[in-house]
Image (cartoon, rainbow, N blue to C red; front, side):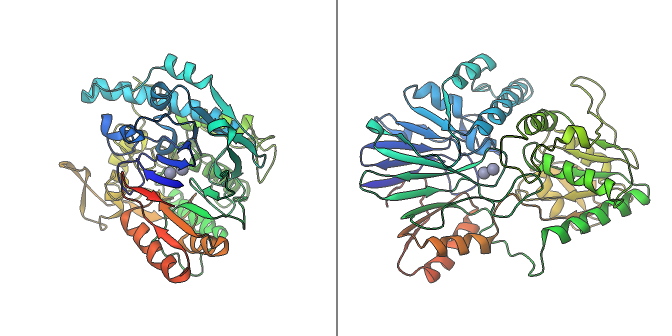
Length: 454
Ligand SMILES: [Zn+2]
Ligand SMILES: [Zn+2]
């Protein structure tokens, strides 16, 4: 029997963590930390794992909603094999060390005494037992090696993988993790199985996002370059809030390309902190991880200005500069949050959004505020800022579009599709469409804690 249990605490993009029981093998998929919740609320509900210890944990990629509680899991279940790609191990260590610093700061500033969940030393010890596997090479794991596993390139960020599992009875399962079929600036699109999958566990971030019919990535890049040029020529500052891992590196490459092609003026680009650390890892692995431009190193091609060190005077948004800074959601205490407070009231400046923002985040609140009205960056009021600056949205998502997800599920036509990693509306919208398109398949949206027989 094969069962699936969602232990991430909700149906949303949160602390991703799922249990697969496969004929006596216990496999856990991802061990994330919720981006919006704090303290123990941000962890998956590990108590639902119960008495039988897991045999294997797969980490699909190094975004914190998939890897953020890995050392907590390892402390609880030291006997489980922890498997990921080499790229994820490299980037994941950097992300988790940064997370220790963020958690420690929150303990001091906000009095969250569960933080940090682990120390730098505990993380280093935990990382010694991570097992790395290349794409496309099957290996055995699970109880007595009864599960045959293969990692496939998920095309989402450096090191991201989909996990294919074959049970003893020959049933095949594919867990997509976060998935993008289209090439992004640095990372080629996903290389995933096109047939032979019985059970598909699929992300649905864009499950209810319709794209304009005439969308092309190249067209979107040109529109992005034009907006940047107009703001700079009008002596404004350009704020681009980005995720430190993935989006930062891709857009840094594009800004360098825009300058080379004369699409934007040669102005300073401010970029730093965690984004720079991750960029160094992207560059280090530029020869031996899948790339659109093998061997291309960002640091050799795009000049950047660093950010002030912690404890120094904060960055001031000045006319004629580009600020490509994290966090993407503009969370409080981040560089993008502090710059937004300066930029919002100024008509000549601009905030250019480049991907998904949670509606409850400061970025989501700014996006939802009409021009000329005021926005509260914090959920429960506080200081209000007039939205006088130019605000625009661009789609450079690292996630597959709704249509691409539907096409992929239809191509595989598995007997069961399990939908995860989406807002409730996204999961419901995709479920309703797949029920129609795949009448012979079971389409599931597992509720937290519910044990689903697959
Ligand atoms: Zn991700
Ligand atoms: Zn994710």
